Image (cartoon, rainbow, N blue to C red; front, side, top):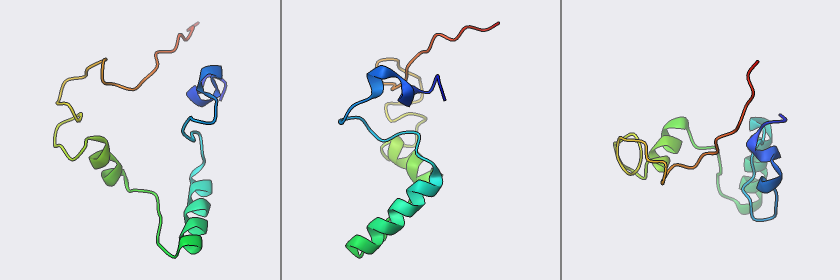
Length: 82
């Protein structure tokens, strides 16, 4: 995707997270790692991911229910609309 965050020049480098990875590749990696280490690895469920993202809280965000630009991790992209 041309406008995807992981394709931006400032989001490339050795110390950046892996992004834009297909679910099939993640499953294959988890299977490989499980066999290599003798433990079970898997993708977290959406509920586990949400719980972890909110740091165990029951609010919309880990800091409360109101959005806060100082704590949110996002990039505003300029997109021209015709």
